[in-house]
Length: 600
Image 1 (cartoon, rainbow, N blue to C red):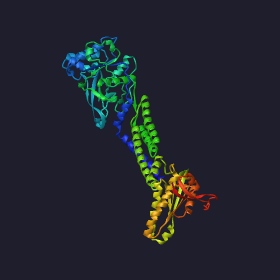
Image 2: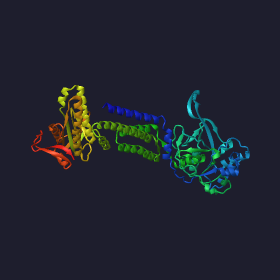
Image 3: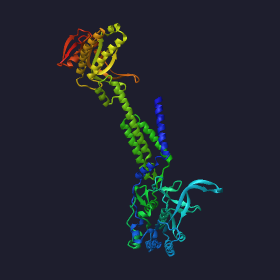
Image 4: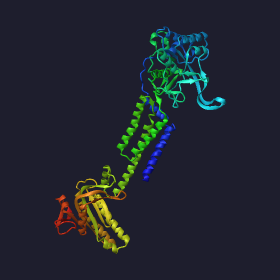
């Protein structure tokens, strides 16, 4: 009872420690990697968004980007808006036009083009840092994402176009998977993200209602379900093609047009949750965010509390299912819990909820591997214990076969046909009265060693020693070929071995003894007999009793066998029948006894 209680408490403590590990955020980076791979599947764009890239070809045709005049973007805006019948729903400039430019006329042209049509969103950005913010009554409180600098377009452009921030905020692992929906300036003004501003203009252009805003966390971030990875939206449209009017203006009608850097040297690319290996350009990320806002395709990240509770319960169940259980059961539970959680998390994602995909599969897998290893070690130690125990009584090859069969040391038995041998040292009591105790023990040990060797060398199971007598059997715990012959060979080996040993003892102590042996074959119950705390692997039944009585009547140096043994070995042994001249206790008249003279 105490042991079971200790195991339960240990399981609860281990599950709690692993749960606290997750709660402390130590699994976050690994979980993000798995969750990103599990959840982020490309979902093709619907054609409402077009990218126009400031790409390498444009840089080669027009010149280095930092030397471009603002008239270039003004020309592009006017071309896109050349007809009222085919204007884009929104034109998003994913660039910063801070301060007055070198060419006032170009500035004025850009501001005029941006303001004339009412569909231009221009970029702005905030510089955030952690620190202290001043509140009422000059009190300061610590906060995150405090705006220390706000970068906005030159005044005319700011007045003409809609502002949309283009901040790309990476998670702790350097991956872009969340989007800041809006920022609130110190004066209280809300500046939407470029994606939100573009989606609002698209909805209004389509005659639809306002964009239903996604659920955000305490800092205003929302989880972006990507529709495509790097280059999935790229249609090889360059600013050069736009300025050369090679793409008909009506191609962009009613769409969201994103114009922004699309060349490695412009340093506007990020690794995202849909692809950790290939960077995505900023305009591509904006396209994914806009698409999700237009579709209303949002995901709510489930709080850690319920998931930590689920993790704790899964770990407790795992420990219960894995510890000292068969591998098949442990594996089935592992697959059920780990695979089931992955399936559940995928289903939940489709319903709009984001779960930690890794927590439970990782925790369960760690426990599965740990318990599997512990169970293996425990089984190996138990096997070693069984081996060391049984090898004292059974031939090593029988022990190996027994362990292969997976026999456990549990109470119970089964009825099988076996050959049973009893042997007793004749004259030992008289000798022990005449010798000193150490001498008696030495002689007895030498005789019992001889008996053990004869039994084990003939693949028998040594059941027990009772004083100067011993019992052994063949045919169990595993079936044996020719088990009756093996028993008789062991009996003859004992008789022959005792002759040589007797000569040694006679010379050393002036005393000698011999063996009387009895062998019988028949059905018996073989197994672990006793109580859970003290049991013996033995055989019981009439066959055992008969063998014992044959031995009790056998003179020294003689092997008595039953007719059943003689019949089993007919033609292979030489025997002399004594008929029923010797009466065995408990046996009716007519029980034939034979002397085993020789094995042919």
